[in-house]
Length: 334
Image (cartoon, rainbow, N blue to C red):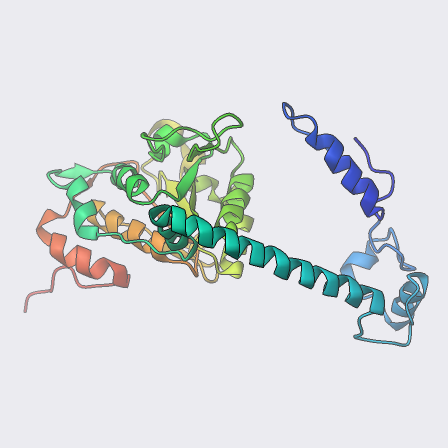
């Protein structure tokens, strides 16, 4: 359906309500807009890439019915509207607090679980997770990650996520839980489809909502498609998790198009993004703990397809020191 006037809020609201009536199909609402709407530069590229200028700003205000001589002020009608919304918000917050208080009394354990999730609390033991990779001489870090993820899914009921159609390769399917769908709203696995950018945006949205630990996975070489979403997560200082497997040149039969030789360095250039490339299965355990607990930065977990030696002899050192980023695993002699 198409909206004829992008400035008509009522028409847009009507279109949304009409779309909501169809519960079996996606809906597309087309809203034609004008760049630089209401200014003398309307519908020109310069309204986007250049300042309007004093005269054009005054003309735009006049067309909108504002006093062109006033700067940095809020019209009375706007102030009245927001004052109404503030009062409405306080009433809704009070109603929620009352309802949650009653819920907490009736279901104390579930209420405590919800509160902990909303506050971002997670009790993760690297010692317990390390048992998942013990007894192995070699293990790909994507495999170690998959083992850790199965256990985390049991420990963290608010862990949700999936892959850009690469779940079996990324080892990110939480096997004990269903896939989210219109008929399975409690599903914790997500089929994102082959669209990394959309996946990254969805993961960011889930993280911003609060109460959820959200992750998205793909091959590291495809991180380029998701880069704007990763960068936005860094700018917003949120704890989204991006699982990127098949790192470096040892990715099997897929050829040079799937060899991410520059992606790790490129991701590390993005401000406020934590990029962790575990050297073995034990470091992968620590990496997942750091990712889940980091609420101020997105984390990129860069994982291998090929098997790597499991550094069992250095287990204690790794579990204690890996969280530092750089640490001494084996002091030099002499």
